[in-house]
Length: 285
Image (spheres, rainbow, N blue to C red):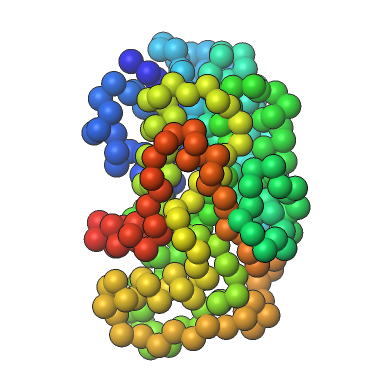
């Protein structure tokens, strides 16, 4: 039996991992939230790893501070979770010989590229959130060799707070929505990302390092919203606006499409197009 610790156990990715558990009876999951395991407290993290009666083989770190705009003012908290938390888990994984699978973000890039980002492209975050996620990655790299850092983008699912659910909620009360049309990336269905994580674990892969994963295809937030309403057959007017017309405390990368060549070579599987995965998510919601 492979034993897997999942931090951030109430978040959308952890819940998406739970949704797929029935396919994998040979895997044993230990889900924790911050009440059971505060990753910001190194002593607590070390004690937690030590007192497990079964050997932990993998730790999937889904715990993160993800409030992009709030991070601009709640900087200390964002650093604590995204940097110190990642470092603490890496130290415990090193001590107990655990493979760490850590979730990162397209926001480590500045969005000035005109082609999809590969893993070796220079990171240059333009927000506090992006900076903390990059520094978390760097702490892991300093400490561990046996890690998978998976950068993903525009994550959504039936769980938690995300763009898909926000659009469906707003459509109940609004006749018109203004959605940013000049930020380009790729929506990623959390269950598809969960499948990738399962595949890494089941295959016992040891090609450690940084990987990019999102669904296939390219979209703006406007495209994403339009597709949500089209699938649900919701009649609502959607206007595409520029980033400048919708100022936010945190800057976003204008272009954050991720190149998936490396993860495709690692796992030899076909990545679903974002529109196809969105249909599944809406059907399940």
